[in-house]
Image 1 (cartoon, rainbow over the protein chains, first blue to last red):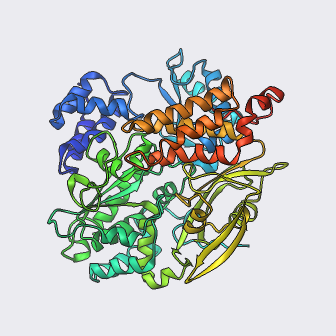
Image 2: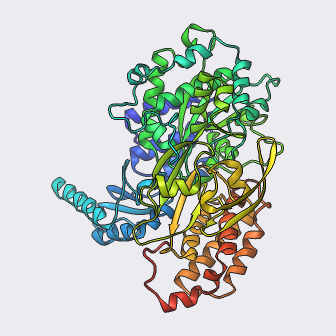
Length: 162
Length: 451
């Protein structure tokens, strides 16, 4: 496990927040995933050891909580809300627009490794449906036209980097 | 037209209002805490009891009663968990409190903690609010540096810490005992009650209070104006204000704060939200988050209800129904989390139910067989109806599955996933019966795909 020094510092800071170490499992999983991009088997072992619990106690969290992933994803993470209020305003078309642009399907990494598109459940911004989260940023009223603009912007940023 | 009364959302979307301590202090921030901490904790609990405040998270349980149930004799520490998981589809109020006015929440938390002798509070915030978590952490650090939180608050002997704890995308963590398990670092399998009432055996088997974000903000205003004065806002047994979140097919979706029971559904949707989209008619509404039973436009509700001490007759159209806990319960649904989801005549109720069922089958924790299997079956049946072959008897089949979930599970998720199916099938039987026919005759009738 090669964690950044600032990640290690945050890990040491968060564990004493709780009277029982095991409570720090979710915070540690978040920190490790932010550092590494995903939760690898050795990360599970490492966290388990850090919190003095058997690895299964961490593994069962990774398999239960939707936000944790065991494989790397694309450089950008596009999460389209699928739940009722967003669907009523066209969320399925929004998702298809992203899929079409990046030539991929929900749940997969695009062939160029640039994005992972995911359909997620309610993001709690139903009044500005359809909503999309790109990495940590919430985008509101993302109809297919707006989805297309956002996709073009992501592609342009990717091209600039190369 | 019913006027909004903004107490909790007073500064939301106000130009120039920032989520930092300086701005909060300029607006009189932490003055209520300053006064509260001079009082006896029991007095504050009494004010909340007198206020009649009911929980804004979903169940509408009286907050003062919840606090009274806390085991204070065990000698164990008492914890407060702030439910900032805001995951009920259709609900988006706590998001704005957290992002725009975090110190109002922290002040409410500190007053609550002082009143209940809590020395450690956790804010359990959903994983999908990464900025919200950072804003809260910054606000807590500011409050701590200014001695509004941490040890020896405002020079008193009383101290209390607050930490932010992020969830990771699971709806069931909003259920209070599931939230406790999650905070203990486990899968959020809800606990069975009895014996695991949080007030007695909660976090780390210690007495625990779990309150919603909006509820705790109300506590601040109750401590400020007094329980008696607060109880005069709203209507009897439905006191105070509440934030209604309107989404779906309506001209002006958004969040609106009203005195509870002082606005009817018709006023809310037609006057406040501008009515249906051009050329459309309202068809159905879910009044309290996606678990609440659906209501159908054109329905009438008749009977006797309590108004203060007397019983009075009521004869309401759906538009006449006051948006309060008791009236919505009276007509067979619930005020829930205040999330009002509107559907117009372009929507097929089978499609809408298929969307909701996909949500619940994804979110069932899998602990209880009726819910784990039942939610999956309901999802598979409705998805098959939409994308495959629909049969006239599907409605009855759906109902029989739903009827075998509610009341047979550890937590209220069983009801939450059964109620949509039960109510959709009951209120729109013809749409379920003739769905195959409708699809064949008019395959492009639907505006948007919903599942």
